[in-house]
Length: 420
Image 1 (cartoon, one colour):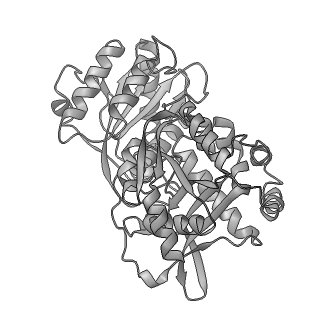
Image 2 (cartoon, one colour):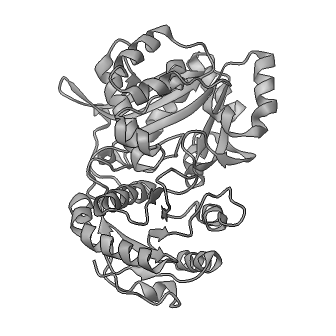
């Protein structure tokens, strides 16, 4: 990779008339547009190609030189896993405010491409001063394809930062961060049909509660996409293969399959967490699945005391939670919607969401919530969800600022009448 310094004072559109970075999603980690904690999509290698810009905003000269060198040395590894041609790197000089202004100008260009910002100025957003750049990037660019890599003294996951690396990051660790982030950016793009799909071959159905193999594949798929999206802590990402938690024993689990002859291939999934008692059959099955995965086993034993994960994210939920308990309402939370990228743009996610809502309402669920990235709000509006005003916060577990939405009462009534 040519890491020559480009003038950051140039207009964003001028600074990038250089060799473009084309990518397909990371090998074994690609995805379709979806909604963060509420919904996600992933699976195998994608054949799509997109141009991506890389910008370095690094205040320490020695760190900047090292990162540039590691980008050069990891070039072949990244291209091997993403089919990418890495371009010249843009240097963005200045303090947090100047870097933010540069990013603002970059995305103001109508032809701006996805951006990866690698910086030692990205800090924990809760910090009133040092967290300014991170907070503003989330506030201003949540609906843009912006990927962030923070250079910190530890690899701990921080809210609204996609990846963290050490100042002396190794070539392999930097390549891994880049590959995963390139996959995330591909995931955030609008879905494009990859192949013709015979609607008759698609089956949406509940997972069988006596089938260990089905659920194991389901949890492995979730782990792959959550790793790619940067939603897992470093330990879970590296030492577990299953994305599962205590909410799963209270959930309705659905899968999308593509049927070929007598075989079915998993191409998607979804769940609706409920505030009902744990299903003892699922408790026993999931303990077996997690038996050799201590990280997953621990997550299964960490209960959500308020019932739904969404209730733990927003303090503003307190009156709603009180009303639900007073009325004895059964409620649910839609999440973990995942679609294989080979079937992107084929309407599978819509089928999963529609089926999940019908299954939940058919079981007496009276209120349904979800949490999603702002960029995915329109996806759920089509199904009757509406944003809950003022509900925007860092989601429990995934450390990503999201919004809350609730399915409108008239939609629930309409679905219930249809099921009668």
